[in-house]
Amino acid sequence: MIKNQQSDTCETVCDQTVIHKEIIQKVRESMTEDDSLNEMAELFKVLGDRTRIRILYALYQSEMCVCDLASLLEMTQSAISHQLRVLKQAKLVKNRKEGKVVYYSPADLHVMQIFMQAMDHVKE
Image 1 (cartoon, helix red, strand yellow):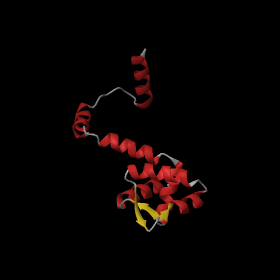
Image 2: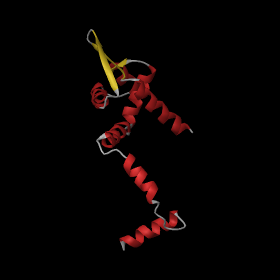
Image 3: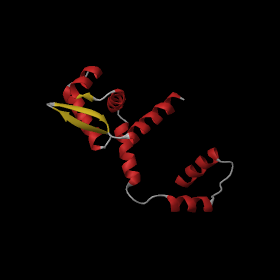
Image 4: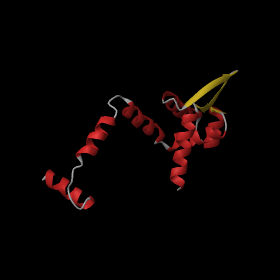
């Protein structure tokens, strides 16, 4: 029964069932076996939260402290702090302390590029 379902699926996508062994072998050899794919999946999980996206969007406009973000996003400081902790653990934001105030900003140029490419993609 499973075999028929797979065959039916292939038939709806392809006119015929053809396995391109050379292509499969080439791709299999180039696929990474280390943890990079898992790390990428974790990165996209972190980016899959609307609140964290809103925080990142705000931080791309300006470095901000927890109080500023809480006011801007109309959330509690505790909720913002929790999301910033997740973003920091994922190496998406960094912080610096000035007196008693902690300011957050994007961790590096790569983070901004990922964010802007995603924004461009959804606007297409």
